[in-house]
Image: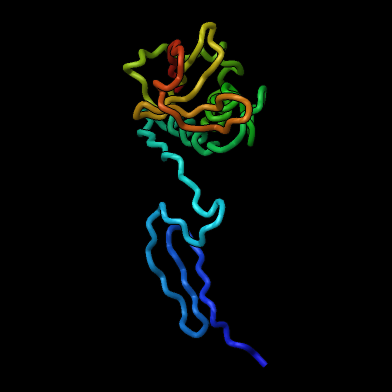
Length: 174
């Protein structure tokens, strides 16, 4: 003998609430992205601001930017060069390697590689350097933002360039 279900189940799938009632089929209704369907701890996760990269000036720089951005969420690990953990220069080296360009391993060495670029002339794919002596590197992605692997316990992330202290300069690799 089978019994009919009389309860209603609700689940959220990519911003759409799905309600199913036995015998009634499925009803789809849009739900605002910030809505929490189902309640409970962790039901709604705040989305991080989306990166807004601009188009890079050439294919190699675009491939490097795309590769670096694809690593968002991978965790920092001192000395790591990928494919799923990175330190700052490991991330930029990995990204440019994917674009077919070999760059030095450390942030200090990367800071002397390529062509110097004024901050006002930055383009996506340019490497940006911080602290004195240079000990941190990120990749400019356009619109005042950079992607970097910052420190232990933090994932690869996109941040505003001006949120970083002690800017030292930039280099164009591609």
